[in-house]
Image 1 (tube, rainbow, N blue to C red):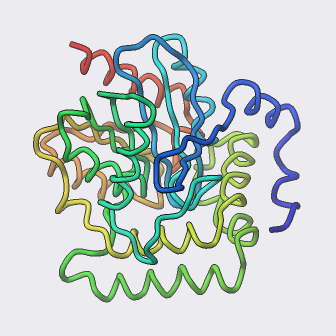
Image 2: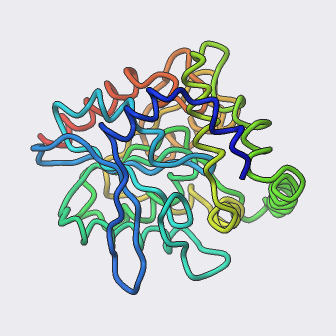
Length: 288
């Protein structure tokens, strides 16, 4: 992995991450571990946050700092990301990621939480929320629907081939340099752009390949939990999972789409105050 992609993040930003939102490994059994970052304490319902295909736990730093006075926020590195052990199969499905998530919640002693899935994280969060007794509320931000539905075979094959070809041709650092700008809007600050690229440059090939299989094989609309209160949000300027597609997810959940103004796909990096306010409202409602 080239170090050039890492050099764009200022040293004081890395120090802030290390001091205020440090990573630690949590053993989940069978020799596996999950890397998590967390801050805040004292809330009855912690927030558990799942990142997307090109990101990691560090991407939740700003939102976590805003929410820390009122709740505990836990962000994981998905299996195969950060220092988290990859799943054992080459082509995992949402249920496999959900099982690892519940093992993590068991290890952390979390009986109930509000679960937040961004982008590909929605394809992990939705099956995890099928255990509705543990998930008090579900938040899907710019959810990826996946390409596993009947009738999407051509799209599935195209996306699968494109993702693997990009990995082969560019490598992780090259993808970060080329693709990261699509995750934010024209309004994003230079620091937000640096964070998005830095997170993407930290991907591991095996974890990313497994995530491609989830993206191509998943079908979010077929697996939305019926018994869990769900909020669906999207950056108004998202070009990766555009508002029209997110509105379809919201409609299937029977809720209006929450629009995050002046934000692209990585809205919680670009507009952490707005996303933190949204999550705060969900927490208040779930607590009641």
